[in-house]
Amino acid sequence: MATLLLVLDLTGTFVFALSGATAGTKRRLDLFGVLVLSFAAGNAGGIARDLLIDATPPAAISNWYYLAASLLAGMVTFWRPSIIDRLRNPVLLFDAAGLGLFAVAGTQKALVFDLNPAMAAVLGMLTGIGGGMSRDLLLTEVPTVLRSDIYAVAALAGAVVVVIGSAFGLPATAVTIAGAVLCFGLRLMAIRWGWHLPVARGPAPPDTPVSKEKKDDA
Image (cartoon, rainbow, N blue to C red; front, side, top):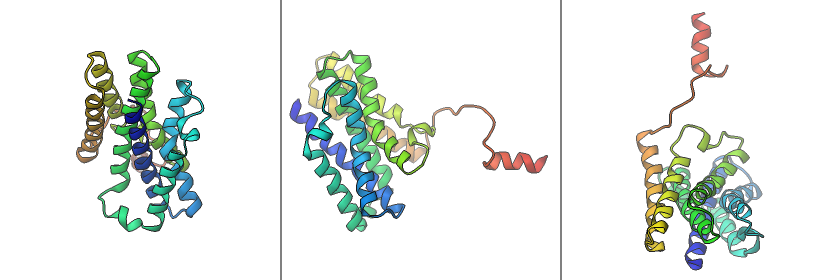
């Protein structure tokens, strides 16, 4: 299980780092900015997870593999952006992949540290959304998870699959893959079909088209 968790962690780190680096290149950041964004997007969720379960120092800080994966993703994206741009909607694709991988890895690691199943699922979700939130905040954007997207819900669904599989004694590798695939699939279907969570009712902000129309009517 330790080897599986490391592989999932590093893979999730790499794809989230690609997501962060791609967003950085689209904003025309310099090399340092792209690498910082790459590291933050790739490791924020894992660092938060390890701190919450008292696995200190966090793996992303104590193991150089995580730094190497983040820097590799950033360098490839900065110097060879055409490789990444060949994929359709690369930021969303890498973000969905990282979301699934981190969600299941976070859940499995929480279970290894003997957290109760409900909290393990919540921690898995937080692990999944941490990198994307850090990326968006560094780019001064409202985090995707707060913009009525099926984002945290997808991460929680993948985490719940892992928890249920563990409760029934199913093979850890199988349920981990199933959880990651479910999370990834839900996120992509939400993007493809425009699925959204219910939005809070309230007055529109002053700069939205709705509020402008109301002013014009008045």
